[in-house]
Amino acid sequence: MKFLVDTDWIIKFLRGHQKTVAVLSRLYDEGFGISIITFSEVYEGVYRFEDEKRDELEENFRNFLTGVQILNIDENIGKIFAEQRAKLRKENKLIDNFDLLIGVTALYYNLELLTNNVKHFERIENLKLRTLSDFSNLLQSVSTTAQTQDKDG
Image (cartoon, rainbow, N blue to C red; front, side, top):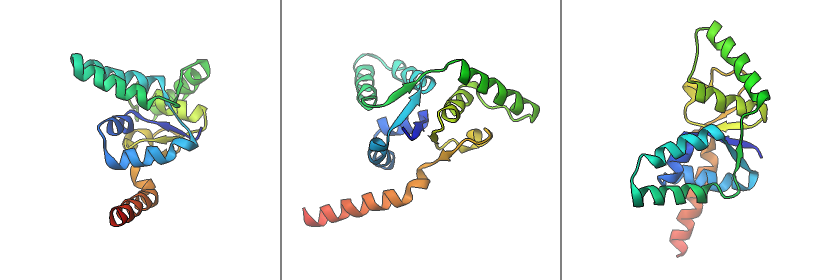
């Protein structure tokens, strides 16, 4: 496993955002996981809807989770969280606890965090971040392949 996927990417994926779907589809074989925090945040969004829409969203999320590892929080992650939070507090740069837990989960497992929320996560020391724009070469090859298929088809 190489990547931890943040909530914003999953939401875009579930909404069918073409570039996000393309990147995650290409990275699937390299392996990625999500934090139990991300799992809970996405489910909160699912539960905001009623009946059929909720069922559809839950099914889509469950399909997304196929082959994706859900990483729990343990005492090691808790200690890293406490250390980072104390450091950020001293620097007067605190971020949301959920974001910090997601970030330190990536740190603990030595994963690159796929997020577009750079503003908060860049405050976490030694955290490797990747945004959608970091995959422009990958997206160009997807676009070129799609154009070639359109011409051939």
